[in-house]
Figure (cartoon, rainbow, N blue to C red):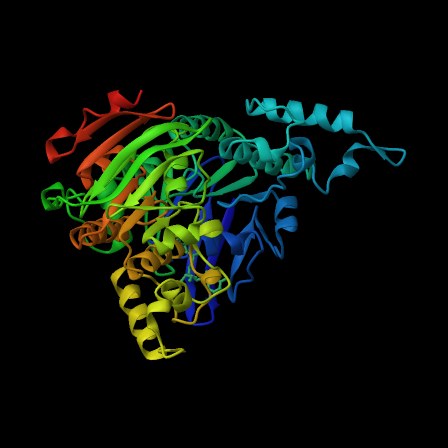
Length: 498
Ligand SMILES: Nc1ncnc2c1ncn2[C@@H]1O[C@H](COP(=O)(O)OP(=O)(O)OP(=O)(O)O)[C@@H](O)[C@H]1O
Ligand SMILES: [Mg+2]
């Protein structure tokens, strides 16, 4: 149904796509995988007309297609849900669904809100999404927002009279929790009756579960293609990364013994409505993870330690000395680093280049008699680019122009370079490819053994158990348990979270 051949696309300094071929058949789910920077998002952006390709051909439903922008794409039945989402938060669900399409509900020059809401209701019901069309998008969960976007794309191709549209989902599951993912999958499976789906994800189990076919890109080229039901995770990993990965890449055996000294102590920290008075400490070189389901309050707790969220009560001590944290600046000054999960909003200055982002915080240290030592800054940035395997054409490339996963790595590099005392990691490996994940685990261990206290919230329980020395269990805003975490406790902890 769709055939892209010889697609080539260069950006200044990089060939993002090099003669890539990509097909989508009717009513199938295609998994699109590859390392960070492999070209997945770029290929899809070419398809919907956000990027213009330098060379190659797109044939859609038997005809050469000239798609110049997402609107034309939608009219031809091709739509993409972006990871960042692109709904307008201050408008209602119904308004978002029919944005720029209000004409369909116009009678004698007047737009009938009632009709719009009714249509929204029936469209949402078609994919069994239970949201009120009058709700503001701002008040919806990430999962619901995605659904609204999917419904919007289906509706657009429907009114354009296209059957079997193509729906592209770029890392849709990174912002979802387990139940929401299951729900999304059920919906996608049922949508297969009427649409084809391109599914991009770094969670290979998901890709294998869902896809009829898996297309693997590497360095902007076609690497391989596998049938979904025949594919094995390790095979896909090997093809993506180009070499075998270690069997157990969390490597519990490499766990370090933490020191005795307490680096950070939190005492009775409280934010009403989010978490109850919490007390705990992290020692020198220790990795402590906070586990709990979404809504357990762990995110809020961590965010208040690094000054992003204000608290109602409680104290924080660093090296035995009480510190006041009213803003992220205070936290940085006290030596607390925070790597947020939402890299685009909080983690990066997207309009600055790679080097400036990495050295943003250390810069003060580098200022020598009022002049920034450019040579040192370069050296420092280059070092971290290598360490974190950041794929960038140059130090001067704007972060905005890097692939999603590489942006995430830069946030990590920034804090590692900053030599903090405490590092709070909020889902550090989200959206990062398997090869780099291995690297990041090794890094986290290394910085811990360098004496930094690490507070971790991770993507999966295996990751928590594999990495940390101790786990704090959080439930309904309260720390309800604590588990020492030598390698052998695997598997017992899920029970405690419920
Ligand atoms: N707007 C842009 N300007 C310059 N370079 C870009 C731009 N968009 C992407 N690139 C580069 O093209 C390459 C492919 O990026 P792309 O975003 O397609 O990767 P990806 O496979 O989606 O990776 P990830 O898994 O990290 O999201 C990267 O090297 C990236 O730096
Ligand atoms: Mg991408």
